[in-house]
Amino acid sequence: MSLEVRDIHVYYGDSYILQGMSLEVQEKEIVCLLGRNGAGKTTTLRSIMGYAPPRRGEIRFHGRVISGKPVHEIVRAGIGYVPEDRRIFAGLTVEENLEVAMLPARAGKRAWTPQRIFEEFPLLERLRKKRGGELSGGEQQLLAIARALMGNPVLLLLDEPCEGLAPVVVEFLGEIILGLKRDTPILLAEQNARFALSIADRGYVIEKGRVQCHGPVEKLREDKDIQQQCLAV
Image (cartoon, rainbow, N blue to C red; front, side, top):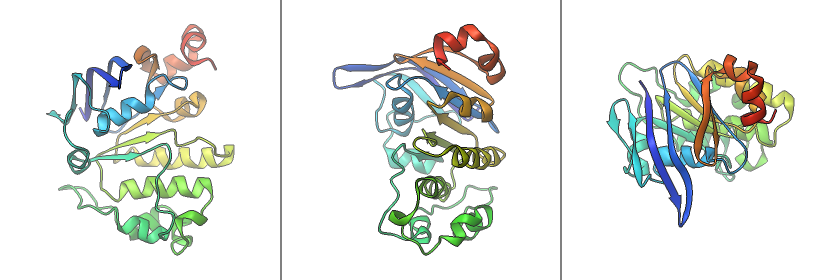
C-alpha cells in the first residue's frame, strides 16, 4: 500500500478541521477526495505533506510513519504536491521552473527530467522560454504538475487542479492525470465531482472533516442517495 491515513485529527488554532479522517491509496490508482468548500479536502492533503500535522492519528507512507515529519523529509520520501494556488515562480521561465524542482529518481524508476517533461507534454516544450507569469491558467496548472513530477515522486497529491479552468482545459488535464497513474498513484482533492469521478478509481466523500461515504467511483456515480446526501451534483 502506498499511503495510509489512520484516524487523523487536525486543528487550525481552536478550529477542529479533521475529525477522524481515514483513507488509503494503493499503487496504480487515482483516489479522489470530494466535498464542498470547507469540508476538509485541502487540510487532508496539507496534513499528509506535514504543513498541518495531526494531533492524533497516524499517516504511513509505504509502511513508514511520516506524520510529524518536516515537509522536506516528506518530499524526499517521495510525495509530490501541487497546491491549489499552483505556486509556480512567475519570474522564471518554464524550463527554469522545472530545473529548480529536480530531485534524484528512486531506484528502478525512470527519472523525470526537463527533456522527459517536454517529450510527455509537448505544450510545455513550446513554452519552455516563456516566464511563468505569462502563461494562461491551464498552462500554469500543467507546469505546476510537471514541476511536481521533477521531484520524481512515487505518490502525487493534487489540490483542486480544475479550479477556474475552461471545460476544454479540464478535459485536457484529465487525460494528463490519467496518463500519470500507470507510474504514480494520485490522491486528488476536487470540488468538481463529475470530473473527479470520471478519472478516479475510488473516492471518499468528506463533510465537516469526516468521511461520509467511500467506495469505487461506480458506486458513487450510480447511487442517487449518496449523490444527494454527499455530492450535491
